[in-house]
Image (cartoon, rainbow, N blue to C red; front, side, top):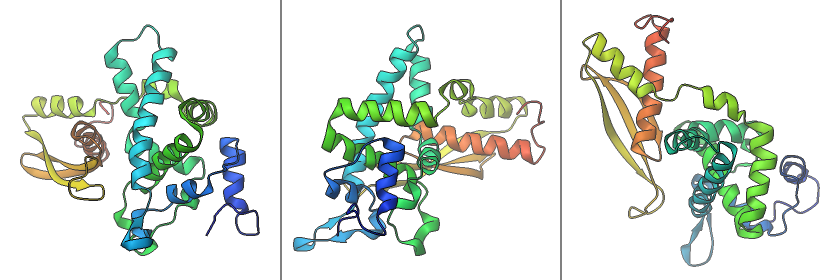
Length: 248
């Protein structure tokens, strides 16, 4: 099965690469795999199951290097702290999910639709797998050019992102101290990508307010999950009037 054969029904795939990314892939087998979520794993010889987890792992590393390189050159006078926060904003699971949806990647992903509700990062995972696939076929320099020129510059407002308040964890803790409320964070689950001993894993973190569970979030680092859970909790407190909107 080749998704990119030029016949009726596959134009959607060709159009995505041509119109969004600006090139036509030759190694179609790699891109097939990039769009296969683990819930739709394809079984091949000797029981081996193929999905996009390995490409996702590779794409994560490549994307992180590309974004770091891009930010280093875009902000020549900013320090390490600013650059680290900006990279975290760009490669966060929430942002990659939005970015994948915006460029039309969502409709290309093969997954078990009966289990759709339990997959929180399917779009961002596929985006990273796509980056991994481009890198495998074209190498780093080509991948870097595509991600910067065709994705970041067209579909991501970097300046707006730089103004976005990221440190909701500190804001939530400060509010708790002011209101004499205990704010804490708990890792409630570790989600392994593939085999149990895989190095790539996600963390589900929950905010506790006076020991009572609040909002949860899943990310690839505990710190990022804490930030996202804190943001969701803080915004919920603003929404229900616990925190005045002027402070939100």
